[in-house]
Image 1 (cartoon, one colour):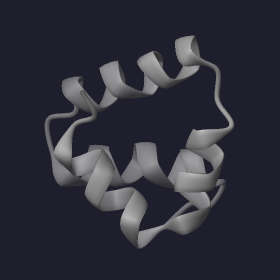
Image 2 (cartoon, rainbow, N blue to C red; image 1 turned 90 degrees about the horizontal axis):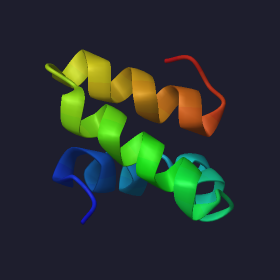
Image 3 (cartoon, rainbow, N blue to C red; image 1 turned 180 degrees about the vertical axis):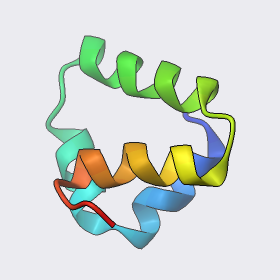
Length: 56
């Protein structure tokens, strides 16, 4: 199951959603694990920014 913060972040950053959809299942699982370990909104934003290729 996708963490809510990741899902919400990807709705705000369509490029992150597009990039996520192109990942392998193993890569998606790695992103999900990173999001579950995120301790703050800033950490979650960093993961989403990295995924989208932008650095907010």
